[in-house]
Length: 473
Image 1: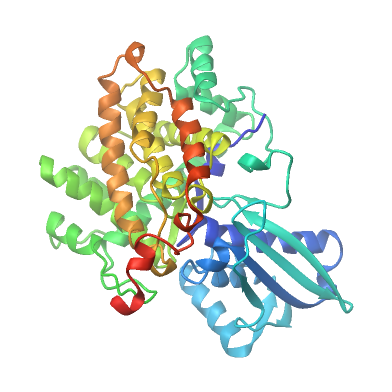
Image 2: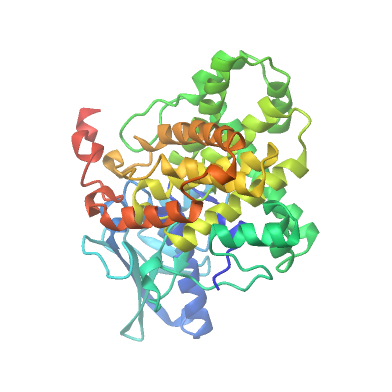
């Protein structure tokens, strides 16, 4: 059975898109490893890259070309200083050369060596082919970016749901009802069952280290977004709003680091209307950083990266001022597991399922996680996830100019508010009265994804994307 770790669902990467930026970046890294394993790397004379389907149609707006350059250059998206990315890209543009894996200099023209093919490959909407000329002959490898930074190499028998095989867990879970059975049989909460699975892969110390790293990245991202003003890159000239909202909420106070900032917010008296503004501010801040090629946590994607951190901040700032790392860990463990159920049973790729696969899934993850830390039972946790997704079904992906900005950034604040509402509704729900279990909404989401017209699946060929253009802005 397919097993996905929390750290597969929550990954540190560079914006603006997990499927169009982080995925191609990781695919380039994997291709380099493939060449090295085959002892072909040192023989490469020339490189070209072909993009297909959604990667081709919205690749420019999603910085797919830049991500591929950085991946081919040997940079790591988790650790590269964001200011260093522009240095590498500018060098490639100006010199028409690329330092392959930071080892060998090859000719590379950004305008001609990355080819945009509108054709869709049969396996997945996000296909890409890397080609190397070796001793005068071409050698190619095709990869698919299937959402959330996940990359697969080739078609598998179960292509309908784009399954990738992972190491098995002691408690194998692909559906919500299986998760509930383990919780009942073991008399454990969802987070405790997930923790036992994670312990089969790594030590408690490593688990805590990785969760701390993920949370600190989220916190730093919110802090940066709330303290950066101006407009976003890409041509739409979208004004950053988190800075102005944050200033109105907290004033001119200066804080030395994100943790000090968090503690100051927790001491602030917040009224109901301000709660909505704070949650929106946190969500907007993350996705404004994401839109400017900043470092975020895919949760489960870059385009939906603001929902989970903003809802977690809501819990820390509004619901529980005494919460500590234990609560953050519990929240993220539950969120990751719910995301994995959607990935196994449906998709987290907007190119396959529209924005319901991104914002819908992230809202479900956040709702379930919030429900557990607020004292919800395992049954209520899945009810919260179901409610959140139920009210995102059919949400299309139609980014204007192919940029992860309009309507993508605002959708994170809407998803966060829905997640909080879903958690509260679930806490007041008797599981005996539930009519729609989580597994049915997962199946429905997948059926809706298959029925959705291609133009509404991250192609910028329908919806708002064709109603508003760069010239209108």
